[in-house]
Image 1 (cartoon, rainbow, N blue to C red):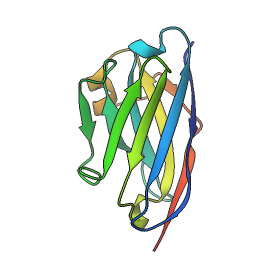
Image 2 (image 1 turned 120 degrees about the vertical axis):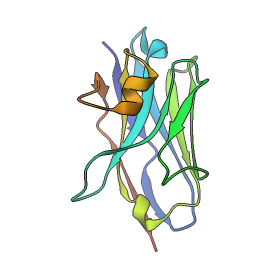
Image 3 (image 1 turned 135 degrees about the vertical axis):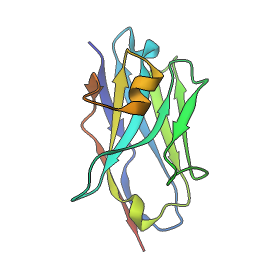
Image 4 (image 1 turned 90 degrees about the vertical axis):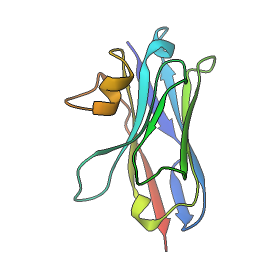
Length: 126
């Protein structure tokens, strides 16, 4: 059973940077496609970025392209989200998710993905 724990959230000024981490436990974690999602108050959850098991394929929401970078270190069972040039509209709770069904399952995000973390709060002040 894979479990996910996010860290790295916090309060930052607009234009600043944060790096989120998602530590996965479970011996099969490195074979899962992973994604970062976010949900702001009163809004639906949205996909921010996704990465396949090898790190060779990535996908980004248009709103974060060129500012955010997703990466993974399978030796550490950890996925990262480097967030630069943060904007107030990036304020949300960020969740890590994993799915054994592959990269496009995470990208499509239709229905519930197999494993979710508890989330970490990111607040960007103007």
